[in-house]
Image (cartoon, rainbow, N blue to C red; front, side):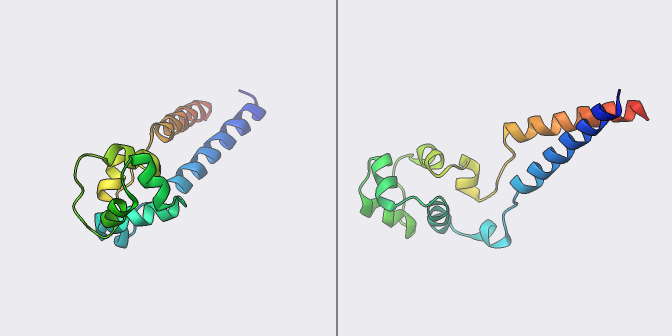
Length: 122
């Protein structure tokens, strides 16, 4: 393997590591302990989505959605479409805990392959 190829592999590994570190923002103590209704509001505001847009997408009234953000009981099962609309996994919506996505796992596998190739050169 040439020096150029070796440098290229190191750059790829560094790029994936940086992407990994930037995308794995573990929930803070506050986020782990916040209520579902507060998490719902925080996620909506973070995505800059209005109450009107959420309620329209879920085909519910704005007042119903506002009640959810105030802690009222949610009837039915709007959780999957709600998670998709807010751009989070169902797990994050329900628990506040983020999970690794498939793209990130693929990147980790590529880093492992690069590391193995580099080890062979030593």
